[in-house]
Each structure stands twice: as structure tokens, then as C-alpha cells.
Length: 110
Picture 1 (cartoon, one colour):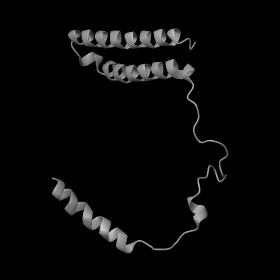
Picture 2 (spheres, rainbow, N blue to C red):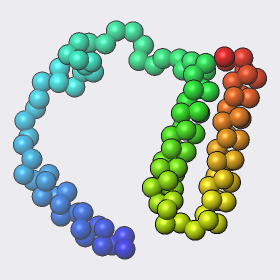
Picture 3 (cartoon, helix red, strand yellow):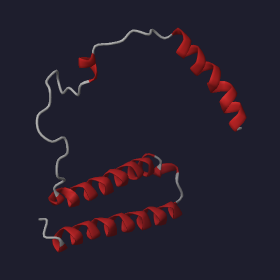
């Protein structure tokens, strides 16, 4: 399998190297720009932990909405026993939300 990858990718890389233009570009082209302006200050910012609970709850509700939409769109064709797994899923999701709320209260975020 690895040999096939070498045989397939090798010629493509070699041909692209042979036909690519060899111009030396302006060094200004490689400077970091942000909307055409040279950035000032440090590039890294401190992540604020007060948004940690918001992020966790967004992910939880986002995943829950995806699965509930799929389940709700096919609920008429599902047997009655199909409600038990979704109830278990909702229980797990609400437990995750409760954990996020607990973490936010414990860390004094809210």
C-alpha cells in the first residue's frame, strides 16, 4: 500500500516541480499581514476561562440537536422501542450539561 502511494504521488510531485515557475518573489509578500496592514503587538492572546462553560454547553446542545433532528425526522417509521435509546441519550447529554454547570460554579466562572 505504501509502495502504491509512492508510485502515485512521486511522479505528480516531480512533474509539478518541473513545470512550476522559478521567479524570486518580493520579500514583502512573505510578511504577515492582516487585512493589508502589518499587525502590531503579540500574536497570542490569553484564553478567558469564563467562556469555558459556554463552549461546553454549545457543543452539548449542538450534538444533541443533530441527533434529535435525525431521530425526530424518522420517528413515525420507528418502533416504540426506539424511544428508550433516545431517552438514554438525552440523559447522558443533560448529565454533561449539568457537569458543565458544575464546573462553571466550581471555578467561579459565572
